[in-house]
Length: 325
Ligand code: PBG
Ligand code: ZN
Image (cartoon, rainbow, N blue to C red; front, side, top):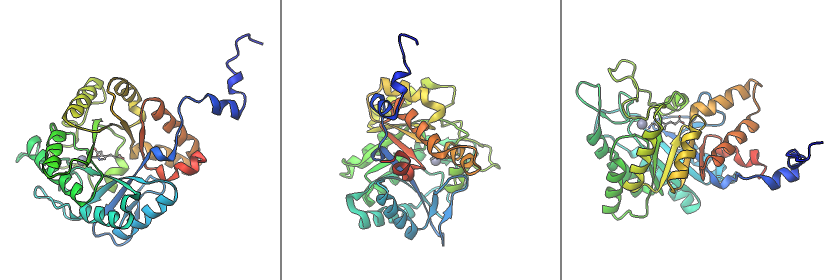
């Protein structure tokens, strides 16, 4: 027998529990929600287990059920029926924010995604130039700040811009403060990468960039996967512009980035386990090729280890069951 045993502390459940360095709890999870204008009945999101494109009525029922499972923090995506080039209407989002607030008061913490890709005819996260080969930065930022203010006035606790334009945090903070909304928090999708792990989301949010455009992907505004330094610059800039919470997205492919950023910037860090990552657990699990609970716990543990204090997960509503909490 080796003199120095490392196996002794792995021997039984009790000692493993006592020696864990990170722990998970349902209170650290945020559940994404989609509410879709003009939908008659709620629809399942392809590839994800127990995730829905909700109607206003089913949205409230879902939140009620989630509260019953100990989940009280949400990230809402409003999907309008009418797609536009400019002059966007955010009533699908603001109406549902107000309804959630009416029914649940402060029992829920509600963050609302701020972007334009579910609104635009072309699926990009901002307003295009006339040649349709470029997202106009400042024109888009003006529209984003206006949306964020409407969400705050409708009752959002937090606005979460996911567009990756320059200067949007400063513009949103200024718009909120000028309107007396200094208590509304900003969660910046600061380190958001140009990723292939967004597939199911784009179908759910009707936000895939059109294949017939000169501008086919989001590479000119989202961060290149080979550019961790860009993620650091974005995070520093967004913190300086007034973001309260910073995010890394996707999660598992960018754990190194999350660990690096959370060690260097002492803001609360969120991680977004994206729809493609979630499908990578749920689809094999459905076919008996993975244990969804174990895969989920292993990935959530990795996020906590890498420095995230909060986890945005499509499986948040399963957290209590999975954690045995
Ligand atoms: C875009 C946005 C994306 C997600 C949320 N907002 C990514 C994208 O389409 O580029 C991804 C979420 C997910 O995949 O779960 N504003
Ligand atoms: Zn977008």
